[in-house]
Every structure is written in structure tokens, then in C-alpha cells.
Length: 96
Image 1 (cartoon, rainbow, N blue to C red):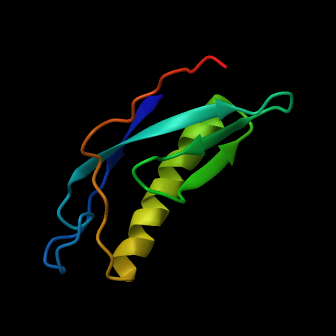
Image 2: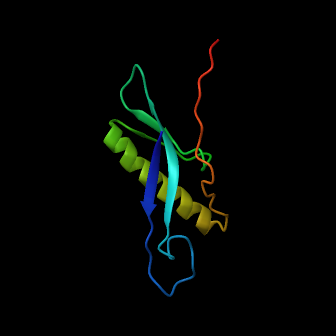
């Protein structure tokens, strides 16, 4: 589990959105190796439906940032609230 930090900068004088205000948003991402195939699936728990994929860890991280930025942009254009990550995701195991 990693924390993804997005540096969001925008131009002054526009309607204030998260990007325009120059805020930095942090979202936890989950990198899941795709066994037996190669690559990683990336999920963003705070943004349900925000999922991407990369052949390598580096590509998956880059695509995760793009996916989160695009997801937030879509929410803002639709006039929807942008979820903030308040509590990081907890992971545990269960034995069956």
C-alpha cells in the first residue's frame, strides 16, 4: 500500500477548485501484482471506481497519478464533491 501525492497547481483568478487553489491531495493506492500474468492493478480506495493498470511498478504508479487526476477532474466537471482520504486504508488477513 502506497500513498500517492498529487501536486495540483492551477492559474490564479479562476473559479476555485482543488486544482486552481494549488492544493496537494494524497490518496492511498493499492498495487496488486497480477499473477501469473505480469503487471499491476492499482486501486484507489477513497475514489471508488478509480482503477488502472501498469506492466511495471513504475508504469503502474505513473498511471495511478494520471487516473486520480482524471477522476478528480471528472468529478469537478460534473459538479460532484471530490472525496478526501480521511483515514488511510487498513489491511489485514483472514485464515480460512
